[in-house]
Image (cartoon, rainbow, N blue to C red; front, top):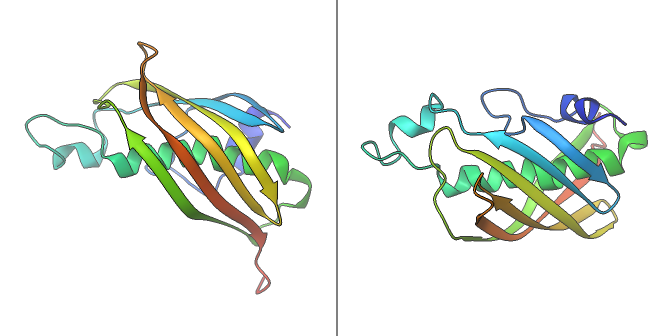
Length: 147
């Protein structure tokens, strides 16, 4: 499966798509990038005089690249329009801020994938190769029985 095909299957669209490029994905993990454009709406009010990317957005970026892209890759043969993808848990440590116009790279490593639940170790680096946040994220990927 091509990387752009994986991104096309994500259940997100701009302005809530936090994946610019998927660099690598295999059965063990994913690597991808995103640049936090200074025009994103949340920068207007989040520390208005000194904008910083909110931690919840950093977590979402890591989840989209590190968990959902990997899940789409792993479940490609069984994905349908009725597939439900939901975050179930996060444990993230924030180490450095991410500012407007910064490009980040997300790395994930699969811990386990069974019974539709995927858990990954994730890390985000800035362009200076500094780790800005790290932790674990888990989610479920199941077919919706109502569809």
